Length: 348
Ligand SMILES: Nc1ncnc2c1ncn2[C@@H]1O[C@H](COP(=O)(O)OP(=O)(O)OP(=O)(O)O)[C@@H](O)[C@H]1O
Image (cartoon, rainbow, N blue to C red; front, side):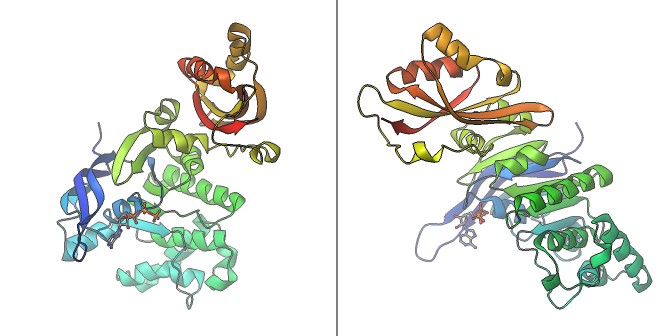
């Protein structure tokens, strides 16, 4: 196995609190980020994603444990050694962090100026970066004159300026609309492919992981609860947090006319359970619901659904109504056949 680009080795981060117990933002994290891959870290707000990411460029240091980036211990580095690590690690941000008083080209040139690049080389390098992110026509504009997607392209070009080997992305598409998100994700994918750059991104959106990450780690309350290749994690999610992210990934929602009547518990013998079913790979095409009806005599009402792809493999989500009285048996049948189920509520 090739050496990982980034290796978190028993990393814990505590924040001391005045007069109280410490906040433990990260607990004993062990995670290898493979070279040349796009790895996503997904978790809810406060799970510890930013703390973990900021350790890779030395903005945070572990309380215990080590963070090794391309063979160097970042937590132990300071002065010139830390600056050397930082030159190998670029970062992009949710709110772009561009300087308002500088044009797009001047923002991109900034890290080159700071690194002491020969002034004669700055303009051609900047032009090359601007072309790579598709902004040649906007090079002279100020951030206020650019759209969100264009600002993020400037952020990406700036992050690439010093030729890093690793790119960190801190919720880079969270402030963008779906179309712009897709374009920025495609650009990250192209950069990963063309430059062989390792990308580590944090997100709270499973769709970002689905669209571009070959590897994923799920973080919950400062612990990695699940990690591996995206398809493996998606097809056999072991942890409840992963499952709940997955059920949300297709964006399939309970129709309004049902949502308005939903309760937390069934009422009466005719009640229906509203169940979200998630399926992946070979199971996606299996006629499981037809079999549930044919073999068990359970009637199924389909309320909403969609099928998407992860890589070239199908991944889908359905919302159905099932008789509440037959719920446990139906769930067991579907889960036995590799589908994920989650009860959203009850009607009737
Ligand atoms: N400087 C700090 N001092 C004290 N506690 C902190 C500090 N920074 C982060 N924390 C705490 O550590 C935990 C993890 O925070 P972190 O910002 O890494 O989470 P996150 O997953 O990135 O969340 P979000 O998506 O909301 O940014 C939280 O409980 C947070 O309150």
